[in-house]
Image 1 (cartoon, rainbow, N blue to C red):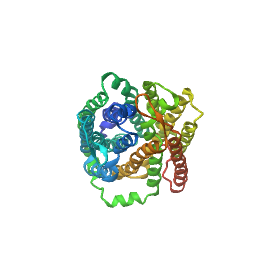
Image 2 (image 1 turned 180 degrees about the vertical axis):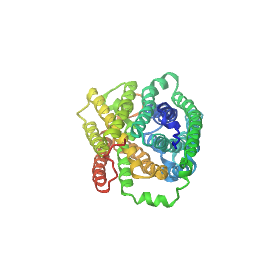
Image 3 (image 1 turned 90 degrees about the vertical axis):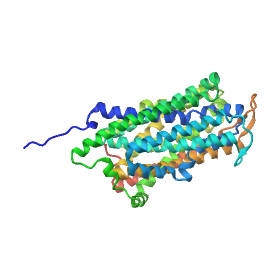
Image 4 (image 1 turned 45 degrees about the horizontal axis):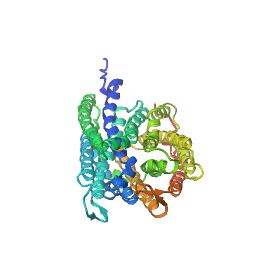
Length: 454
């Protein structure tokens, strides 16, 4: 008697990579919107009267609801309870709504008088919109990660995660390259309007993916295995305790918050930093600030493929953390102000930015079972968001209190970025220490982080 072998949708190379391309478009739009205001810091100060602390408040607002109302953790629970289809569409709607509020704030409320909780009305409303967007973007991130774990199980999972990150970085690079030229030619709010349109397209993309994922679950059910939805029903709140007791979880989470605190908050201020320290033109400074995203387009899938075939994920995380130390220390030296060095250091940062994510996110799938992945990723992203909220606020405060050295001809402040770069260097040193501990823990507990995925 012969056994019937049913080919599933994700067994098709074209189908699983096509599904990835669909959801990756949503993340590309999310990254575009996330980074589109960063190069415009100086214009926000001169055109809308924002200050550095207000910009830091706005930049940190991305993570405010995720941290203080635990929205990201609730998003992880929703993901594990209701599945990737429902959660993906919900997160896309939140991103659209949040960006629409942010757009309203910098257009209709641009000249509004009065303050709210000590901040200008347009600053506070823009931050509120950005915070809602942040909930959607972070929940979308863990949803897409779980989608990849599901569709690429037993296949090229690290490569797929690397490709998704690389495609998302296209959105970042486009934001840093286009924000200033578009704003100068068409108005300060136009780049954000473009992002809003892209996010609406991202919502449509998740609807398309949902039909593909539903078909895959049907095929899994027909094969006699539990579908992802049935698997997710096994999750209970007691699993949170199990996750929090896992030493590997804490090491990954702490490494995540320290590493990303050296990258994303730095990029929020990088355009102004390059203009003030290296004398770059605005458009060039924005493009260079986005170079890590451009490098990730090529390198993250490459490093992901190496992790799939050769392993060494823990070693990759150590190497990437070490590279960040050198980058920020060199940026902190006042006498080193050659433009070519600024470019080279951003390229090195881009390599590190590709090394660590390509190794870190697939490693989580080796530490936790599938039905806990959504919550595990959510908890890690929650801890990461503490840094993404606090560090921009910290840097903005440091600039305002200790680093003002004069005024620009347009009336904005001139800053010395030496102290902020030293702060970023400290985060990088701590990330290296944690990555070393993670590698030793992996050797003792046998997570298999140094082993290939295929």
